[in-house]
Image (cartoon, rainbow over all chains, first blue to last red; front, top):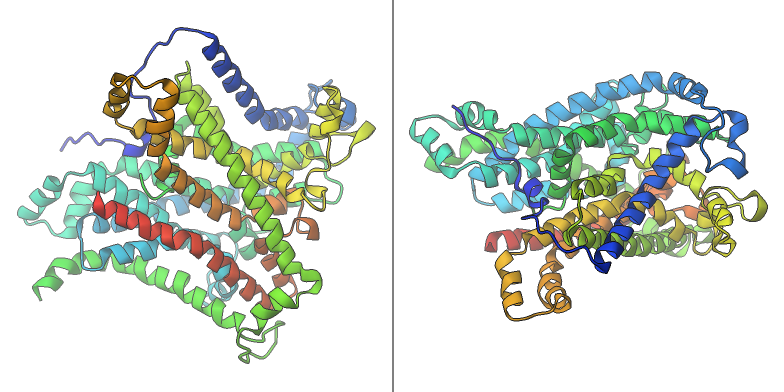
Length: 294
Length: 297
């Protein structure tokens, strides 16, 4: 079966509807000047991060701190890498399983909720969604007890478990919207007429055309798990936790080594930034889903 | 029986998630609530029922009014954060909507801070918001000095009265792009016929925006306000990263963490529940509203 699956509607809706060439007047100059000014402001912290991370200790003095390094050195990168390396690889062991597992769960839920309008479906969906807005502090105290009681290994396995659970609402939402807007009713109906049950319909007809939905949820969950600090600080430590904990330990010390901290911040951000630059439009798809209406 | 055959398989597929969420969201909230009305103030403590005493203590009997202080901090932070993200988000969306060459590039840059964690951006913002003024000024203060704008130098988040407004700057930097994306989708979702009709009627550009386009953006603005507002109430990572936990910048989410370090479970639970109620007051009406809007469409 060759079905060309359309990307989620939200992604498309960001693109301009049509190009219009306007004459280049004084209004345009103001417009471009503002756009470029904001561009520079947004990029300024990135400039500071990169420049400072390549400086040596003597180079960091206040008078020259906005300048380019006098002597480019990777010493701070080496130092940061040696204190972040273990947690860097651990965070992949966290973020990849979380992304895959929550996406499969979300696809199943989203499919059911988009097609099977059982009585009370709306209430159930709203109750599911509420789970993604709660401040996790409201569950954290008993959560710590419960994961110890049921005996999940501390550190990464525990974090995989909790991220998968609390990722259910957003993944369900993304897939429900995806299926509701892109999978034609007739397709599901045809499968049913052919005698395929729900599971068969889902496995053989729906899953193969769900790839765009999967890309969005995988990126979203990968990024959230990678960037998470709240669950990490409550449920792990620097020895068994993800990179945000390790970065905070490196950068938050009494007299912070700014060059190493900034190199560390860049190392920490690199995987998600690469994902964003390469797969930006899918990343935005997840973002837009977060606003419920898409 | 036929109904069961019809709905059964779907519910079966859904049930593991429903059970997990029932336990880990609603069950644990109930557990936290129970803790918040107990007197478990240490790791061993008895678990007697004390009613709303813990809540009462937070508002009337906290040392140095620590809890109300954290709420005040949160309020300042939230107002500045909301105003800032809405302003820049709308302005950027407007600029791009007016037609800019290489729009995709601008969009990508404006949005990129969303891909970075607060913990990582906190590192650079702590450096940028260096509170030293005068000769030894660093960070943004240093930049002001170099531009001969010394009068703009200030103590940023270390200002005891308005420091939380400065703390909102990194948050604005991080999330304005998101609000821009929402508004941009809003702009692009307005039917072309509507704009054309206004043009036929001879509406000026100003009137077009004032009377046709901006009113159409109201639902988007509402979404943005709710999403940013509830994120603001939960703000934790950024503050932990920029200032670390301390009195000056304490908000309820950080206060919970600090209280847990002293093993005062009942008090930590009470703060968490207050936080949950604050978020629910914003989110629940929003969820009901979107649910209805969807049904009507």
